[in-house]
Every structure is written in C-alpha cells, then in structure tokens.
Amino acid sequence: MFLSSVGVAAFSDGRMMEGQELQSVSKLEEQLQQARQRSKELRQQLRLELEAASELEKRLEKVRADKAVTRQLIAQELQEVKVAHAKLQEVKGRDGTPTERARQALSSSVLASDTGALTVQRCDVLQQRARALLHGGADLEAAGGNSCLSEAREAAEIVEQLEDLGHGDDALYRALLQFSLRGLERHLEPDDPEVLARVHSLGVSLENLGEKTLALQFYQRAYESRSQRLGSEHRDTLDSGYNLATCYRNVGKLSEAEVLFENVLTCSQRVLGSQCPLTIDTAEQLADLLERKDLVAAWKLRRSLLEWSRSAYGEDDPAALLAMAKLAGVLKRAADAGVASRLAAAEALKASVARHQKVLGAESPEAIQAAAELAEFMASSGAKAPPRLKWFQAGGDLLHEDQRDHA
Image 1 (cartoon, one colour):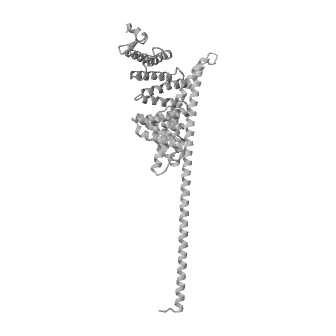
Image 2: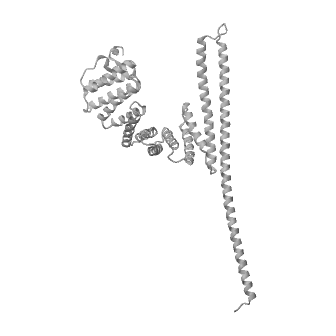
C-alpha cells in the first residue's frame, strides 16, 4: 500500500504534534512535582513555626506562673512584717524603745513562723506546678505531641526543690522524673549526662517506693552508661555504683554486691581519699558483707574504717564511736571463732567501753551495750569482769552491780 505525498505530510505533522504534546505533558508533570515538593516544604516550615510558637506560649505561661508565685510570697512576707510590727509594739518598754531581750525573742519567733509558713507555701506552689506539668504532658502525649526540653528540665528541678524543702513524696517524684526522662530522651542522646542523672534519680525514687527490681534496672543503666561516658572513677559513676551495689545486696545478690563495693571502694579511695563520706560508707557496706564469710578480712577493713572515721569526723564523733564498737564486735566474733586473739578482742572491747563512757556517759545506752558485750565476752573466757562491768538481768533491765540492792 502506498501513500500519496499529501498523506505522508499529514502523517508527519501528526507525529510532530503528538511529540509536542508529550513534551508539554512531561513539563507539566515536572512542574506539578515541584509544586508538591514546595508545598511539603511549606507545610514542614509551618509545623516548625507552630511548634516554636507553642513553646514560646508555654514559656510565657511559666513566666506568668512564676510571677504569681512571687506575688504570693511578697504578700506573705508583707503579712509577716505586719504581724512582727504588731508584736513589736506590744513589747516596747515604757520609753517606747524595745528591750534587747524583747528584740531577740521577737526575732526568733518571727523567723521560725516565717520560715515554716514560707516552706509550706512554697511546697504547695511547687506541687501545683508539678500537677499542671504532668496533666499538660499527658494531654500532649495523648494527642501525639512531645513535651519541650524546658518542661522536662523544669520537672527535675521541681523534684530537687521539693527535696531541699524537706517534702517527701516518692510517688510524685517518680511521676515527675519519668516525665522529665521521657522529655530529655526525645531531645538528647541516650548517654547524655543530664539523661543519666534522671535515670539515676528515678532508680532512687523507685527503690524508696519498694520497687527494688525495677530500680535495679535503672541503676544498672546509669552505672554502665556513666562508666562508658564519664569513666569508672568519675564521682557520678561512683555514686551510681554505690547505689547499684546496695540494691544488689537488698535483692539478695550478695556476690555481685561485694564485687561492686570493692571496685567502688578502690576507685573512691584513690580519687576522693579515705576521709570522703562515700569511701567510708562504701567500706562500711563491704565490711558488713565480709562479716558473713571472712571475719579476718572484715576485721582488717573495720580497723581501717576506724582510722578513716576518726580522721574525717574526730575521735568523739558518733560515727567514730560506732566504728570503734563495730571493730570490737567483729574482733569478739573472730576470737570466738578461733581466728583472732582473745586478748586482742578483750582489749578492743575495753577500749570501746572506756571511750563510750567518756564521751557519752556511763548511763548512755551505747555505753551500757558496750559494757554488756565486754562482760559477756570475759565471762565466756572464764575471766572475771571488773565490778562496774558486771551486769545481771532484773525486771527486764540491765543494771550496774552496785544497783543490785536497789532493784
């Protein structure tokens, strides 16, 4: 079949028009794709701007709340000043001038009432803000949103302020710390020191609430992450290690607790020194564990503990007296078990009695207990105890021998 020249020309024109239309459609599709991308970018930008506006609104609300709190405190202080002025007028002397004694009494009275009232009021205000944070956070999370970083930090600050004011509510602390941790984890790295601080604090709160198994998980995370991020000898790492070891002991994992207490003690003594409270507390916990299986090791550690306590607190401090009594006690047990000298145990017990009687008095419960342990030990050794250290049971109370006739 053959086409005329006119037919060929028409066919060519048709193909050309079809190609132009295809190019036009392709260009339109490209423009549509660009429009869609631009629309997406605009929506993203709008979302970010809305989030920024929301955060600014929250900050403004916080400023307003703080302003209201400040006004309440100022009003309370003005009221206290009026009360103080009225009392001052009542105690003025005949010449209209307050006596010095009246000034001192008034000052003490106003200070006590002012401190107590402000503390209670401040706790109330902080609890109100805490409830507002938790309620707002729950609504935001239910709607698929996330709390801002400033609110997460504020929740942790509220916990610290309430603790400083002596307010104890671990259920509230747990809720605030959980809220804070969720917020921090959305904005910071998992091993950020601020995140790990909340993890550690949440472990403390859970343990105080009796949830030791759950607390153990948070302590483990805090200790392991702090060891990697901050190093094994950083103070925060040592604090988490101490709490983790204590929690191990409380849940019955004594072997794990002993190993960790030893590690913390070694690092703490090297970095913080033997007089640091953390070093002394860790050694005390380790000594308690060692007394279960190795009295000689426990005695050696308690001998060091006595030296550290005396250096840190002084010879007459209750902590040093307790360290002395515990050293004498473990020596007594070691002597009874045949792994220590009975003479050394007797001397340690006598020294403990003498120190307790000198510092606390012979009639103090601690001195009486120390003397009773010495008398019991000497009786078991077949030795005669000094007259003032002989005890007998009368009416359920331990009495000196020279009080026997009056019993």
